[in-house]
Image (cartoon, rainbow over the protein chains, first blue to last red):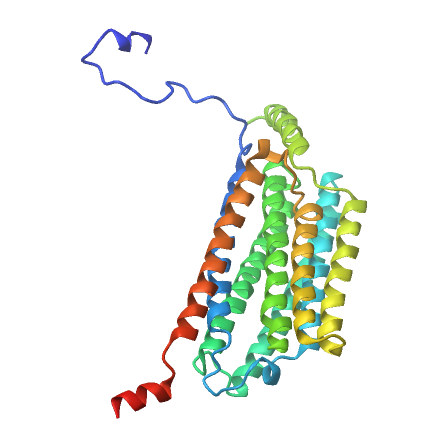
Length: 208
Length: 131
């Protein structure tokens, strides 16, 4: 390699002949953060859409007739509880307690399922009342925004169950710890998005 | 791979893992509880204000939005363990970049579309012109 400068007929390489050695997974945290930031942009677009179209009811029902704030409050509590229980799972992971980690992950998953169940109940209720996504621009943007968040939670739960199986069979090996850390970021990130949803969609919707 | 080899490798990884842990710590029971209690307060107050309608709508809207911003910051610090040092500051830089883009997108969309709506010719004027 050092002779490339003299021999002109050899192709010139513009990269390091040898990659600097990084320990496996040392950049996963930053990479996953980048993914979350790009996901954040998806949600920003959906929020912008809702912000623009949220007042176009097309003579259909508006937030005041449709939303049940008690239900939203319960839903918010479910997600908040799941956030703190995931935190406890991470603390247990830090102490290398496999069973404790698994129990807290299971509790987190149950709270997540409760959240999804309530959300699906709400959606079913809305559709039953005729407030389908096709009814008005407000409802289209509502279903897309809240539905995308719900879809994220669904995949978060699938990921959570997968990791529980991984931890069960392989223990808290470094790779599993890294995966749990990524899911931790994902899960807390979804809670951050939900703050935006309950504030801009539900609470401010009731004030319109 | 022999068990010994595997153990040595695990230890090797552990060592680096530990280095990484210094970058993004997993927080403590105390920090999680502080975050949780703050979140509960910051969620309960906006819900209570909207449900009871104790304040005028305009004031309620402003308070609710302010609480949301504060709660997002609380989540970032206590649950996502954001600080200026994690990953050599690249986490924070990516976050700031994202916030700028999100702000441009949101503010730009709302601003443009608001003006589009207000400057649009009302329907009854249009029918008059046609007629």
